[in-house]
Length: 639
Image 1 (cartoon, helix red, strand yellow):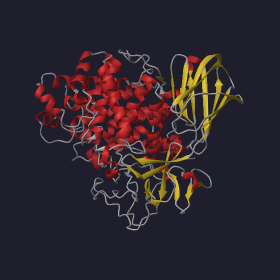
Image 2 (tube, one colour):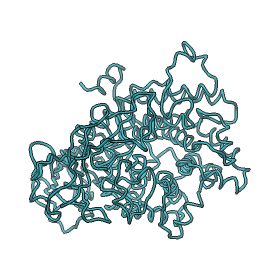
Image 3 (cartoon, rainbow, N blue to C red):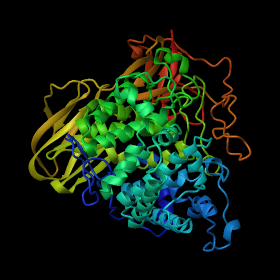
Image 4 (cartoon, rainbow, N blue to C red):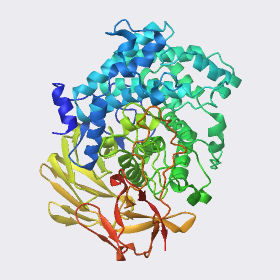
């Protein structure tokens, strides 16, 4: 029995149906006052309608869930209670709670942000698994926050830090991103309502909305622009989502208040030069524009979001689907210069997947699904340590670097918080649907229940270790339905069989293959997507390249010589300085590869089980998501 199952069993809890909702089109029934008003080609399923089956992806979810199940709610609430002076209800009072470290320490301006992420993650995990332990933990967090909000007075303000930090922000004085931290709380409370049906969470966040309106409505335009120079996360998206629930136009006004003219106006005018702006400060602003388009029909907001996505995926993404170095944009004409040890802030990928999901909904875009797969398998899956369940802040691509993991109590970086969410929601984009069409986007073992159509579909596969995925209709009511299977960019010509008989297709890569027919219980679809080795070179240097097998980035293993620890910041007295972390790479570490970049398969062979490859020079290659606690090479110097 794994750790996840043990925790659930010890809690005496069982899996039940979860009331999951979302802020993506198609998941809003009964919870939203304002629905999406624009045309949608592919709607989302509720997360509760898709269950992951055993496999590599569910392994990550279970490691995440084990960590989440073991987190002390009192410790997560400690900084909030400290801010409000609320300890009367705690046995042992203030001294009974062990303080958290890292970004949740009491001297950090960002304290409280992880609690917001966990509110979302507990809701997501409850929806994804149906296990009551995550409902109970979310409910406990919400109840504790309600107590703090009441203790802080009648304004509706709620935070782990004093309101004075907001006042400093309004004055343009130095402070570390208070609205960014509040955004996590707003989003987390909204998610608790939408995913876990927590009505108290909605009451709390509506009071927070009242406070924000009173705080900001009378401020000058000069003050607004000054305030928005400080990172504010996705406050615009959060208020659009709150407006969609309440229909309160003040929440719409607040969403528009957080429109960042200095950043978004140039993009609106077609200027795609990102300079050296902070990447993960930029992406959430665009996600807010995507949500505005859905709720208001503003075509210019659609165009901004679509243009930005194209630029990010086409010019600012590494082979892993990640972006940024030391959290910032750089000149893509100098791409190779920035393949270093501080690439790929995980929060950037988390947010790019959110933006991609909007585009998937709008367009049923196979290109968006291609990117989603690339980033999910090569960054999100690879972020997590398979031994401890801890996660990376950066996904370093410097040759000879290694992953630097968080710790259970002394990190709490932003990418820890978004990681809690990412590993809980793998199932959210495997399937999409229109009125009479079912899209299969990702090849992940899973079971879909489409109650409205009387369809239960089971997907069984060992992808990416094998090329075939099998879809079985466990339930079907014999009516005609279009089944649209993604034909990935990386695949050779697929072979498709329905109940053992081949189906002809004329589709091309990065499209959908559609099968129209009446489906019956027991019908089986087998799809084989031929995979091969390829080299993806850096856009500015044909001599620097990464190896891929199908959509999977391969890493050359380089041992552990000189490594201090996979979690060097486990000592709370050591500064969490991952921006300048020295990987102590051995001077003689091999980074070259003697292959034909047009035909890498001539000198690289697959060996043994899984996705292990060996080069003619005896280099061992594995998926980047399996390169844990060791040095590795992704971008090789091709000879």
